[in-house]
Picture 1 (tube, one colour):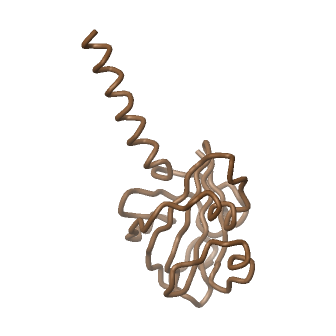
Picture 2 (cartoon, one colour; picture 1 turned 30 degrees about the vertical axis):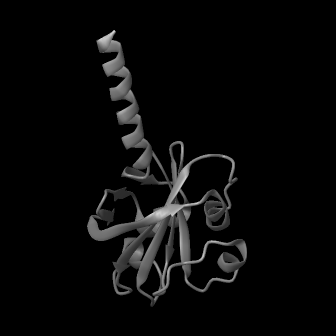
Picture 3 (tube, helix red, strand yellow; picture 1 turned 90 degrees about the vertical axis):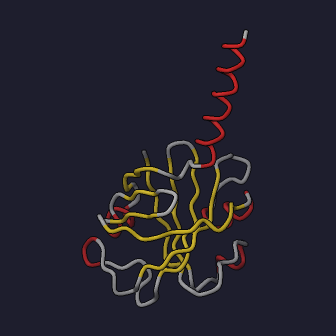
Length: 151
């Protein structure tokens, strides 16, 4: 009985840890924009790696389902989770095919959304945190692009 209880507690702890870190790990570029600009990426608690270059990131907060829906055009009832990160990728940094993430602007923010084995990432410029409403995203000059990855 004690072993069964211990196994259940351990399973719950492992599931809880992995649910909070769903966007962490290696991701293969799926969309044409990801394939032509970033290639494969990797996320850890403190770093985003694009094309073998690491950038320090800080998780700011989790995104609400409505916010995820606004930026990634996802069904807010479909599940999954999203996060907002702060980072600094200089505009001079070139990636695949000499492309940049935000043109002549520094990349300051990254939003992620994981559902199953898919990851969507949106990069933003601008000093202020992006506003995640349909109207704000539709009229945003800070949204640099969205990219899709898979495991």
